[in-house]
Length: 320
Length: 259
Image (cartoon, rainbow over all chains, first blue to last red; front, side):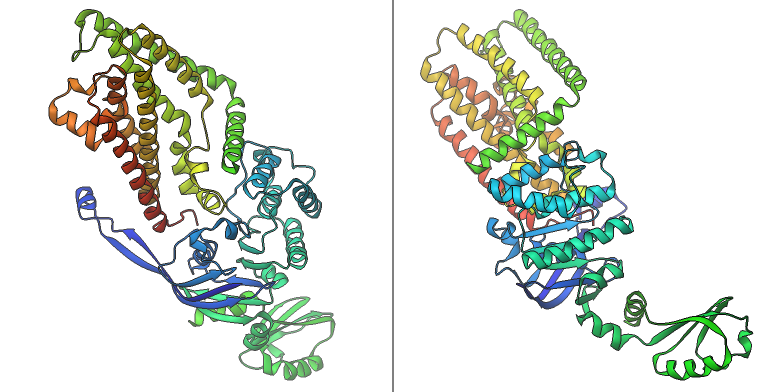
């Protein structure tokens, strides 16, 4: 479905001399390698999370996979096609949704953009009416479909954007920060929709987001990119269980305590504000700490949590 | 066929957007009529005193001016979207155009036809027809040749706009390129025979204003060497080919701004 081998992307930007005449005459460039020999494969119907800090190369990678950008070197095949050749048959099977950009016609109603996309993707009337109706229902968009885009809220616009991008039932979806700026209701609506879409259309989804809970809810596999190189490519669950080094113990106390008197391992981090006591300890010590703690405190509730994906990733990225 | 359908749909949407602000259409039209009227009167007045300009009579000079206006207004009518290309580039909206299974020119070159300019274009064509009918030595064949050479000029105009778009991708600069194009074409308001030989050469083979405006009118007036038909056809095809190659080259260096 998606095959990438030794992908390199280099951007060039002009060196800015102070002297404007020099700038014009001695036009020279500085080269910046955004992707440094990436290789991976994504199969049909997979949902893969693409994570990494700003400037890691996530968007560049998705733009190359969709055919917007030309790779400097390496092999890229999506749906057995070379994306940059922009064959109409290829473009009819993909969609790229960018959270901070839109393809909707600003002054006109959403329905006009849908009509335009119907013509662009040559969707027969019957299929258009069916898919459009399904998407409008799934995304609860019937109220605003005939309103000019400029009058919509961000959440409504994102939902309209999804309808416009998926009207041709693409097999591969590239989603770049699709939840940016959305409230939790809109986010959960879009997450359930994407799950449903993946199931219904057997679609492959590559999702980039800085919001880890979105990735956790959707993807089973993640690719972590930093400085244009792949840091991790594998199961999300495996990364959480194998890379998680700390456990967080949260206790709701029924009686005040003196923290200094608690007998805990020296490297445990303690945060106490009655009635909440939070202790972060190494995973291997949690049983011992728990056993000892139960003898020292009186409590009404207690939870033990793994490290969050954000924490694991932050440590992984900082270690590099 | 599909591209024609899409073109009409985009034109309908463009018209819909324009009609959302009727007052601006009125003001724009009044401004353009005034500018054209004043200059037309100026040329008329000038020619009543000089009688002959580079061997052309007042009516013939007005035909040069009207042909310039037709070519210039055609460019604005058809390729208005080019002037909005920078906004699409810097906002990154151009990305979503590249992802569509149609040629991007459908959107960024001819995707925003300006109805206001169509009104003016009709006026200029009407006036040109009137002045042509006043000429005594014009045959039907010459009128056909004039129209063919005008088509040739439109191909050159399209090629120049494609080159401007390509330059936009490489330099993120569009408005100034359009201004340079329009300033240079203004040199063709009058027959380029009135300029010095070196400038005539530049305006023919480097910046083909002469081929766009002077050659069609001279063809109409039957004062054109037949070799010029082939030269102008060759120029138009060469420009169309090279601007398309330039477009493909620029796409390879497109950096997709706006994140």
